[in-house]
Amino acid sequence: MQDNEDAPVTHAKVVVVGAGPAGSATALHLAQLGIDDVVIVDLHDFPRDKTCGSGLSPRAITTLQELKIWDSIEPLTYPITDLRIVTRDGHEALVSAGEKAAAAICLRRDLDFEIHERSLEAGVKFLPGFAASEPIVRGDRWIGIKARDGREVRAEWVVVANGAHSTLSTATGPKRMIHAIMGWWEGVDYRPHTVEMIWDDLTLPYYGWLFPETETRVNIGITYQDDHKLKNARRIFRAFLAKHYRDRLEGATQLGKWKGHPIVYSYRLGHLWTPGRVVVGEAGRMTHPATGEGIYQGMRSGMFAAEAIHDVLAGRAREREALERYARRCAATFLPSFWAGGLARGMLRTPFLDMMVQAGSMPRLRDATARMLAHL
Ligand SMILES: Cc1cc2nc3c(=O)[nH]c(=O)nc-3n(C[C@H](O)[C@H](O)[C@H](O)COP(=O)(O)OP(=O)(O)OC[C@H]3O[C@@H](n4cnc5c(N)ncnc54)[C@H](O)[C@@H]3O)c2cc1C
Image (tube, rainbow, N blue to C red; front, side, top):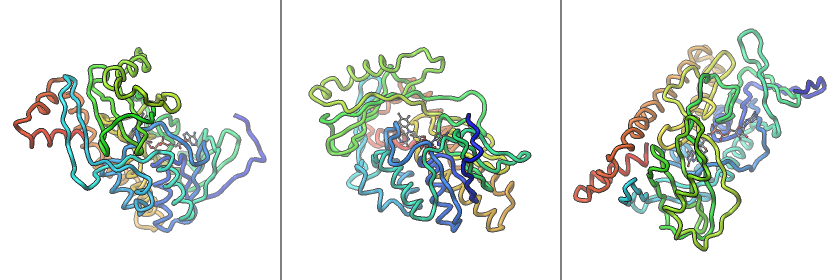
C-alpha cells in the first residue's frame, strides 16, 4: 500500500463500505431516518455489473416496498408468476402464482444503480474508486476506513458491506461456499414469466436455473458444492447445458463470457459488530444455504443496521444495546430459513423431491412442495 500524506480525509457520521444492495440499502435507510452525514464508498463507479441470477423473491420485493423504491424499480423488472421444477429423475412440475407476479428478475446493473441513485438523492455522498483496505482504529474502536491510495474516511461508525470477499468482516473461520457459474443468451425459447429450477446429479445438493431477464434474454447457471476445490466449473456447466438445454440453445446467441463467483453462507451469524463497526449482507455471510439468495438478506440487514445506528444517535439506546439487538434481529429473521435450507439440501439428495413431484394425484401436496422450494 502507498501512504500518501496529501490524500484527502473525509469526515462523516457513518461510512458504508460497498454499494451493493446491502450497503446502498443501509445508506438509503440512514438518510430516510434523518441522518444527514453518510458517505458510501465502492471500488467501482455506477452503474456496474455483478455476477448474479438477479432474482428478486417476494420478500425482496416487500423490502424494496418498505424502502419506498419499488415503484421506480418495478418498471425495470421482468415479472415472474410461474416456476418450472425438474427433479433429478427428470420429473417435472409447474407451479403458478396466478396473474399477480410473485417474484421478479431485475438486472443487477439496474437494481444496484437504482438503489444507489435513490440514496444519493436522499443526501448520501459517494466516493467511487475507493478500494477500502484497512480500518482506522483507536483502541478497540473503528473510527474510519482507509483506501489503498491513502484516502481516508473518518466516521463514528463503519458499516462493512463489501460482499463475499470481505476482509473487513467480523466473520472469521473457514468460509462455507456455494460455487456458481452462469452465462447469458438471447433467443432461447422459454415459457413467459417462468423461472426454471433443475435438480441434477451434476449439481446436487444445489441446482441449475434459467431466469428470463427480458422478453428476449435469459441467464442460465448452476450452483454446486466443491468444498475441496477439485471440480471443473466449466466442465460441469457444459454437461448441464448439454443435458437440459441443448435443443433450446441451438440458434441462440451467447452474450459475453460465462462468469463464476462464490456465494458465502453460514448457519450461524456470529458477532456482527465490534465498537464502531457493523457488518451487513454477504460480508456477514447472510445468504441462503440452499438457494444462494442474498439480495433480500443484504437489504434487510442493511435496514436493521441503519435502525440500530439511528437508535444510538437519537439517544434511545447505548451502542452495545443497539448493536446486540441488530445481531439478534438478523438471527431471528434469517436463521430459521437458513436451517430449513440446510434440511432441504439434505432431503434433496434423497428421492424426496421426486416422490413429491410425482404425486400428481395429490396436487396440493405437489404445489406446496414446489412453493416451499421456491421460497426457501
Ligand atoms: C452466480 C450467482 C447468482 C446469484 N443469484 C442470486 C439471485 O438470483 N437472487 C439473490 O437474491 N441472490 C443471488 N445471488 C447472491 C447475491 O448476488 C449476493 O448475495 C448479494 O449481491 C450480496 O449483496 P451485498 O450488497 O452484501 O454484496 P455485493 O452485492 O457483492 O456488493 C458488494 C459491493 O462492495 C464493493 N466492494 C468490494 N470490495 C470492496 C473494497 N475493498 N472497497 C470498496 N468496495 C468494495 C463491490 O464493488 C460491490 O459493489 C447470486 C450470487 C451469485 C454468485
